[in-house]
Length: 101
Image 1 (cartoon, rainbow, N blue to C red):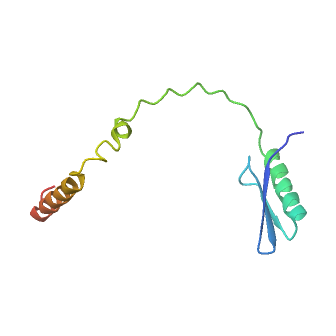
Image 2: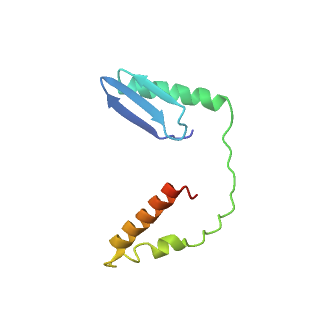
Image 3: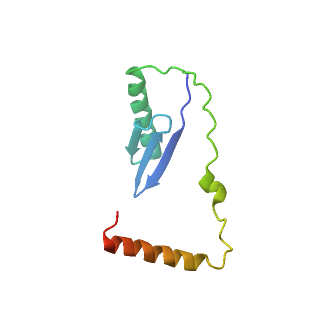
């Protein structure tokens, strides 16, 4: 016998139950028990259509550090930062007006 986690939600006089390990196995009903029973029936049907197997994965190689994140906020205390941003925006607008791509 296997155990599965079921999320039960009540809204607008209706219950819904979803098997977390199998998102397509859901049930709805006027009562919590009815919704769970429908979700269980959907799971049982789903399990008869295939099999659950275990696979092994090799560890994923650690990602290299992102230089953008390492430099984030470097100029946060620079008193001329806002002026620089205005100048950059003006320059880009001028390039757009001149049709430079």
